[in-house]
Length: 64
Image 1: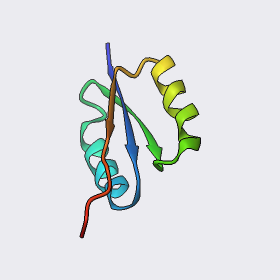
Image 2 (image 1 turned 180 degrees about the horizontal axis):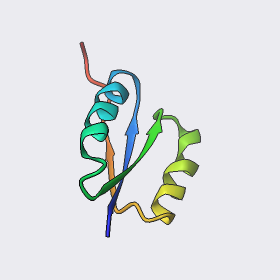
Image 3 (image 1 turned 180 degrees about the vertical axis):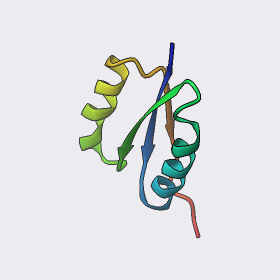
């Protein structure tokens, strides 16, 4: 059984997550990437949970 992980990303974090996903997706993990941190993405995140995501990864803004 594959582990399903939902990653909520934005900006530079999106690029980094996509690099990691490319390396690990075949190792028994399935990733659902939701780009953006606004309220309109809540429906997509909830759908990911209903479709089996048990882990939600998200990052907050960090200063440069």
